[in-house]
Every structure is written in structure tokens, then in C-alpha cells.
Length: 138
Image (cartoon, rainbow, N blue to C red):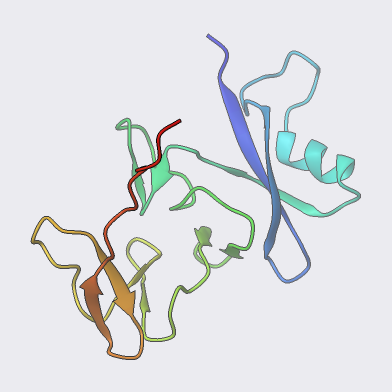
């Protein structure tokens, strides 16, 4: 089984500018002992950090060890003090949960089995419009 790690390239402001699959950190088959440093050199000295596809909110979905709280995405910020990838703030009213490093709405998501969208003006959840259906014949 081939295990493939993912890596995030950061700009000088610690913003993720790309994410790519790469060698697993335990792969020493090419004489490389530190893939983050190797990929940093490949990317002209930019900071490159490993990110875990299976980590979200500080939990590993397969029961493994969580890594840097969240899988990095383009536009995410890396917080070096907390060693965490943080997604962009979706709305100005949302706050960062410092346990999961995910954004939290000021009002909990309704538990009514329906789909909702956040309304920043009302600072509340509203029912999402129904999904469109394909009514045209082929």
C-alpha cells in the first residue's frame, strides 16, 4: 500500500498558495530524510509544510493522530504558534474556536433535518432554497 502525504506551500504571510501530494514522511527511498525541507528547496525556499487529508477540527477521521488541526486548502492561514491550518473566516460575525481551529457561527446550526444558509445581515440561519430538479427531457 502506498501512503501519500500532502504538502502546503505558504507565502511570506503564512497563507497557503498551493497544496500538492508528495512523498510520505517515512519514505527514505531517495535518501531524503526531511520532505518538508526537500519540497521547500524545490519551491525556491518557500515554506512547505505537511498537511493531513484525514484531519479536521483536531481529529483524525480514521482514529489516527490528528495533524495541524485541519487539512490545508488554498487561502488557509498557517498559525505557527499553534501549529494549525485555519480556513478563511466565512463571515465577520463568526469566531474562531481555539480547540478545533474552525469558525463557529454566533447561533448554532438548526437541528431540524433541513438545509440552512447563514444570513449575515440577520445573524441567523435561514432555510436554504430547495435544490433545483432536472425537469427537461433528454
